Amino acid sequence: MERIYERQKIADYIAKSSYRAVLHSLDIEYYLIAYKKGELVCSPFQSELLFQIVEQGSINIYFIRDDGTCYSLSNGTTDYFLGDMEIFYPKNNNIYAEAAESLTSISFSIEKYRERLLSNNKFLELICSSLASKIGAITAIDVAPASLTERVMSYMKYKCFDETLKGIEQAAFHLHCSARQLQRILNQGVDAGSVIKLGKGTYKLV
Image 1: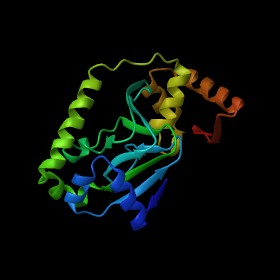
Image 2: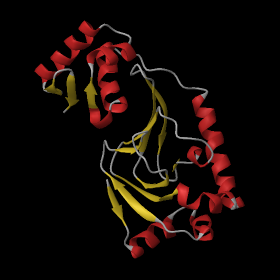
Image 3: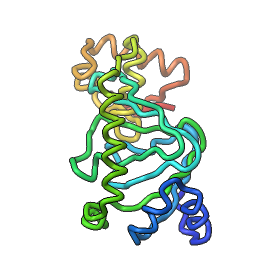
């Protein structure tokens, strides 16, 4: 992830944005964020609340349960909003957005500008339209069938800080499997080179 503060580059992206009129009306400080494929654009591990508009590239949106079960919510491309729900509600600890390819977003702090955002009717119209579309998508979600191995890998990637699992017993409880089953899968991951062991009961995705 790279934050870009070059004024001209920011101005160029805003000028090409479908929302340029609203962005100009907000009169706030913007910057760009560039992500590489596979990087998390939005996750519960991020402490800063950001509003982001995808201007280049695409993202995959997932809902990850504590047992590693993965629900695909939607795919986002140019003009997709991230952070619209966070304007009104606390962060959802189960929703993740991952860059499906190289991605660039126009970004700004929600907390810094919340009152200004809530007082701009044109901006709120865009947010209402975005949230309505997302609610429609959520009503049609279906869980992707997954093996225990897939759930373990998903759990490590999305639910463990720094993709590092600490504590076999606790993780097995969340994954609804036995500690022996989890240990076997982790050992297989180590043998396959997809997981490394950092210490007793501590494993990290490669």
